[in-house]
Length: 67
Image (cartoon, rainbow, N blue to C red):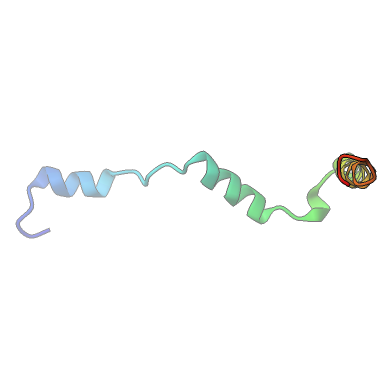
C-alpha cells in the first residue's frame, strides 16, 4: 500500500471477486449432489436409458456390418 495512489488502494478493497464461469458453477453444484438427492423418477429414467443403450450395443454387435 505504501507508494500507491489512494484510487488504487480503494479499487483493491472494493473490487468484487471474479464471477464464476458456467462450468465452475455446474462443478460446484454437482460436487455437492448426492445420489439420495435425486428424485426417484430421475433415477428410474437414468437406469432405463443405460439399459436401452447397452441393449442397442448388444443388438448391433450381432449384425453383418460388425462381422
